[in-house]
Amino acid sequence: MIYDTVIVGKGPAGVSAAIYLARANLRVLVIGKGYGALEGASVIENYYGFSEPIDARILHENGMKQAKRLGAEILEDEVIDISQNYEDGSFSVSTPNEKFLAKSVLLATGKARKNLKIPGFMDFLGKGISFCAICDGFFFKGKRIGVIGSGDYAAHEAQELVRFSKDITIFTNGKEAESDKFPPEVKFVKDKILKISGEDKVEKIETELNNYQIDGIFVAEGTAGAGDFALKLGIVTKDDNILVDSGYMTNIPGIFAAGDCIGGLLQIAKAVSDGANVSISIKSYLKNKNGKGK
Amino acid sequence: MIMAVIEITKQNYEKEVIESDKTVLLDFWAPWCAPCRAASPIVEELSNDESLNIKVCKVNVDDEPEIAYNYGIVSIPTFVVVKGGSMVAKKVGLQSLESLKELVGAE
Image (cartoon, rainbow over all chains, first blue to last red):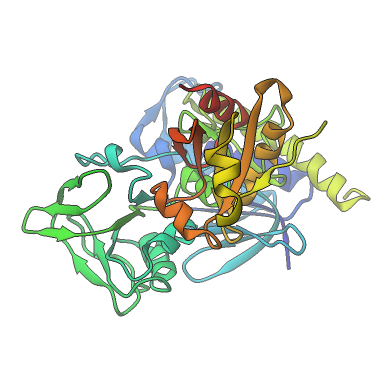
């Protein structure tokens, strides 16, 4: 079974696209946790058609009901990995427990990039701090690796990294480990990170209680966002936004992006508009790909 | 004329990179790295732009770990600009064509 489109993120951009694609009779799956930037807004009073302020949660729930009624599937879960299958160009979208096949993917996860607010973090990007275990684990064979994160996404990165080194420490940065999928050989440090330091590359993570000698740090805090997937798939970004063409397609054919992760106005109206527009492009992409239309 | 992207090995490194009279762009990559594969058409397009008057090269870090180590590569793709045998600029991560053009123009 292969979906026409798997949409990552169930905010207004993702769900709007799902509504249009489902109405076009395409097989659509939306995967996401929570409802993104809307969670920060309790009431919305600048969205067209509501004479009184509307509760953000109600707007979100109505959107999901609408998409479901029209035939879209919605899954409350976290996407930890997206990869392309080189034989046929299809995509695999993984959650901690399942894997879904798709002909196209829409990234609608909200703001693309999250840099950590830890002193030293920005200084060591590309000098021992990486966002991609599968790309850069190779450079830390047999070395001391730190993973910053605590959930399923961090566990997924740790699973990639144990192929390269057995010396892996998970820095949860003040949280409890929230996944049961961490490899058995990893160690945990649960106090807060104060600083990342070194000469010209990463050498040390300093926490509230101790200092740890570390050669490479992999960042996997929270859930993976569009920026993380962009790095792993090779999607071009600019100023921390996903770069798309006029049809909302990234440089990788079949992968589209919409909503806050492509930048511009961070508003529901714009996200909904992106969702409608990208659905038109996805439909025409699938039609050309299938050769005979749908 | 279409300029090919040159594969760098230990054997041709001195001649093609260090002794080059043109500015050299080194693309550090590996076959198992998806963003590196995505960079490939962008790097090729750059090599076809004659107006830039540069030499575009690729280094497979799997085959040439020593060259990668010498440039301090710990993340791929990484792009390095070499002028007169010395590294003058370095950028980590997949770049747009515009960003690579900017990088090779850097002093």
